[in-house]
Image (tube, rainbow, N blue to C red; front, top):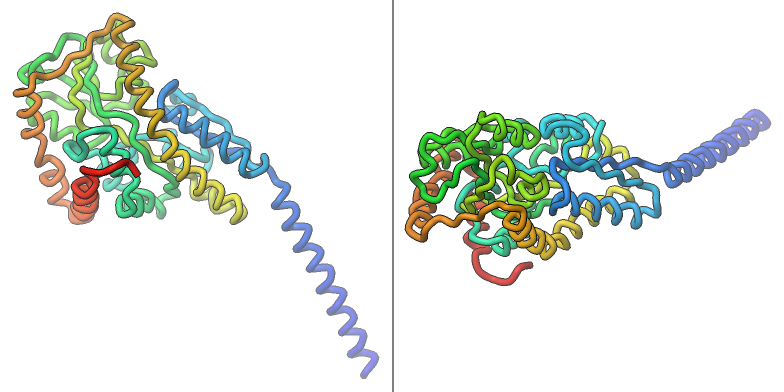
Length: 346
């Protein structure tokens, strides 16, 4: 009996030793494995594109090459909805896309871009860094395949149009492209325009063919894609502002070892702050490029700008109030916007 017990003990010890070796080899294999991180963004040669490149480089550096970053700008991996779906299902690892386009995932994504929230890029930078806002925005989509890792602002909205729109009265009857946002839709309706939700890849052909009269986007986009031939006028309405989300595929993120997850989160947070002064410089450069290429920049008169702001002031409250979850989210962001209206950029 004692011999049998000793034999069992020896087998147990040997089995434990084999298991410990297996675990050690498995851990070593995980450390050696290389992960591909495809990053998609709808635009090119602007703040989101630069952020994507900087983020890819930082993660590759800090992971010691265990994560290889690949950047695909200008919707190379499909339209914006396809990019988002790709991230949700793990075919694409990262998307750098305006939050309004995630409303099909969770309608609360668009609250950060409600009109009238911020009055300058610097104000928007402070809002994007507010802890309460980040907690809200980065947590959205967690049950829909998304892991929020960062958020930043790139510029205020501008309106490119085929015919000059110098006064608020010029908006009436015009068909204008918007992001997929109830806030943008309601704001334009109040100005007498017809909003048309459209993904970026369809905008330039629609302008060229006369399907729309104008399009809302950032001036860096209009400059980078040379819109001057189709729509040489830009009215700088400056509302709302364009924020970008850095959304990670949760399926992919959860497959990473904990140390690589920490690197992803750390570098996303760092790069979305580091891009702030660069985004401002890119915005100013795009304005110069637009006029140098034959385009014209238009500002509304002080009276019309004041009327415009008054007209859209209650859009966020009015659109969100019938929807409890959306309204709670809007109140969080609106309160943070008031709190961050003054002070140095964080």
